[in-house]
Image 1 (tube, rainbow, N blue to C red):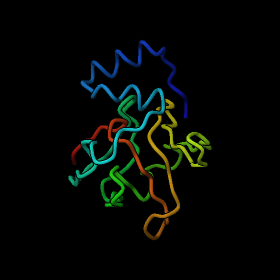
Image 2 (cartoon, helix red, strand yellow):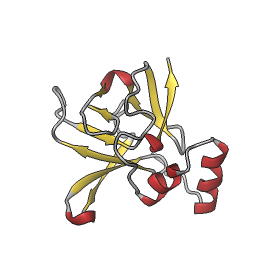
Image 3 (tube, rainbow, N blue to C red):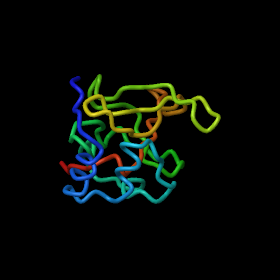
Image 4 (cartoon, rainbow, N blue to C red):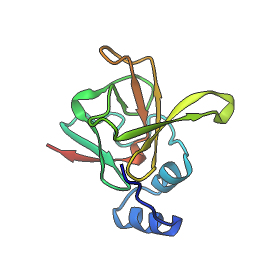
Length: 135
C-alpha cells in the first residue's frame, strides 16, 4: 500500500481534529503502549469494523475479536491481507513482532503466536490506535 506521509505536527493536528484521546499520538507515532485494561475497546463487543485512528484504513472485523485476558483488544486476523505490516521489535530487552498500519505506518501493537484456531495468532492492539465503525 502507499504510505501516507505527514509531519509530526500534522499527525498531532489530525488526531486532535478527530477527537482522539491524548495518548493516541504517543501510541501511533512514537510506539508507546497504553496501560492494560484502560483502553476504550478492551471490553468492547459491538459488531463492526476497527479502523486505523490515523488514516481510517480497515484493519479488523469484530467477528475476529476475542478476550485474551491480556488487557488490550485482541484479534485473530486482519480483515484485509496487506493492511498490517509486521516489523521485528527488540525494545525492552524482548524480541517481539510489532504491527503497523500499512497505509500510514501507525504503530498498532504486537502480534503473538498464542491465539485461537484457526490462525493461532493474537493481534494485541492498543485501543488508542483504533477507531470503530458500527455495522
